Length: 258
Image (cartoon, rainbow, N blue to C red; front, side):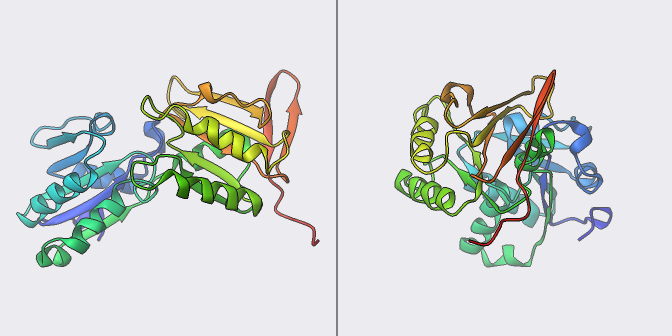
């Protein structure tokens, strides 16, 4: 359903992009402008300017399903609802929570107009900052064990690194989980060369953005927090040094046959 013809009893799930308003897509902006109710995690919702007559429903970070059910209930009551996420709503964000709520919720929710509007994910914004590290096969892994066992995280890291994927690590560290990114580096150092590039990108596209390119051997876990995305190159990923400037990082598209 186009944002231009949004009508009562609809729910749109929107990716706001990584932070810079210029990275909000026109489709997302149109959907935000049409909404009567905006729902999201407080800091993300604060990125949407207030408008007269639009109700902001800010929630805590760990209540995704409650947030989704609230949005569906409002849409079922005839409201034009927009659920917002940072980056892309389908990447470790609210789109999955909304469809999980529909899957296990009221049968009437399946008749609602539900639209997902894509956004620029952090992994794409970070990759663009440093060159083309995602030029070949890659995967995204969340290091958070809030919704899955840490053993599963370790299994996936080991399998992906061993298979030659570039890794995009979301949720690398928090005050409650400061040790996990260090454990991740320790696992990967047993699989990848120490020269494999590591990119720490904090607050990408925002005024306080910090992007650092280093190596797996030198990577410091203290450089990561919940605003950081960590990209770890494969054995094939290359770094192009530049005098007086940050290096470029890219992964060649061609891999020679064994």
